[in-house]
Image 1 (cartoon, one colour):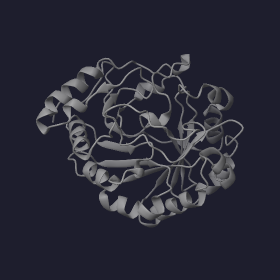
Image 2: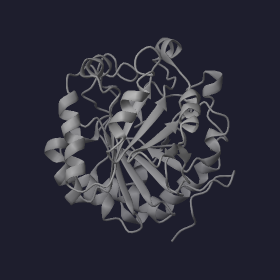
Image 3: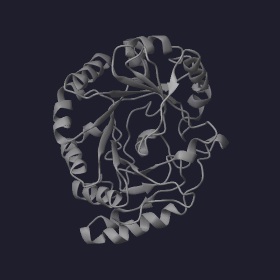
Length: 329
C-alpha cells in the first residue's frame, strides 16, 4: 500500500465522498430552489466507470476504507448499480454508502444491495407530507418512506436519515422525529443549515444551531457514542429506551474540522479538499490509464499539504460552493 493520505496537520483520510452527477430531480429550498440548471461547461461529461474505478483504487491504496457515492441525486445515473459494484469490488474498501433523496429506493434498493451497497442515507426534512412537499418541491413523501421501509425489510441493519434544521420550518419537530425512531433502527441526523454562495438570504432567515438539540438530548439521558476512524462528522447519541440514534452535524461549532477524515471528488473529476474550499484540483487527466496511479497519488498527496486547518464559514466565506449539489454535499 502507498503512504496513507495525510495532511500537514496529521489528519488522516479514510473516507472519500465521490459525486457521480450534479443533477437532482428535487428542488429543496436550501440547495436547488429553482431546480437543477446545467452549468454549461465544455467537456462537462460526468466521471465514467473506468475513471471511478481508477480514482477509488488510488484512494484505497492510500488507506481509504469508506466511499460515499453522492450527487446531486446519484440514482439518476442509469449505471448507478454498476458504480456501486465498481466501488464495492475495490480491494480495501469496506464501506460503500450512498446519500439519496430516496424517491427510487422502494423499486431499486434490492439491486443496490446486490451490487454491494452497505450503508444508506436518505434525506427527509419533515415527517409531515405537506411540509416535505414545501421543502423539497416534490410530493414524494410516501414513496420515500416506502423506500426506507424496504431497505430495512431486506436486511439493512440501519438507515440514516438526514434532516437539515431550519428555523420556523422543522426545528421544533424533534418530538415527532423521536417518536418515529423509538422502535426503528434509524439514525436521525440533524444537519445545521450551511451558508453557500447562492443561499445567503435563506441562511440568515432559517439557520439554527444544533446545540439546543444536543443539550435537550443530554438532559433526557442520551449518551455520546464513540466515533470510528472512517465515520462522518456527526456526534452520535444513543439512548437505552430507543432503537434509533440521533446524530448532530454542527459545522459552526469550534473544533469541527479537527477530526476531518474525508476528501471529495466531484462528478467532473476534481479533488476538493473541503466542501467550502476555494478551488478544485483537476484529476481527470490522470484517470485515463491504470499506469497513471503513482502520478495521481502524488498529485493528491501534494495538494493535501495545502489543505487549510479549517473552513471559513464563521467568516461568511463558503468558498466556491454555489450550492450543496455542486460537489456532492
